[in-house]
Length: 97
Image (cartoon, rainbow, N blue to C red; front, side, top):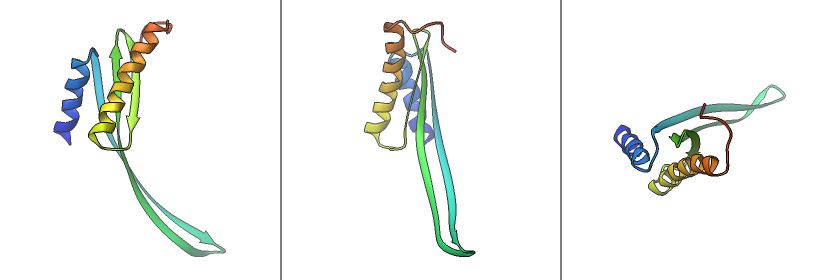
């Protein structure tokens, strides 16, 4: 996973970002449904995803996905870069955060 994420940092920097951060996240959950003091259902789940944070032309962009496919990761990175460019082109106020 580390190599994959590092490749997306390089891809973001190669696409015009002066800063590119890629974060993998994983959230695990467990739940119990109780009715009148009796456990009725048990459940658990795992949600995984990747978030991209970039700076292009002094503007921040962010996008994330929980679909860990190459197509979805490529799209999220493009959305983050496109978002920061859009802010710049449409007169987003002030410098980046």
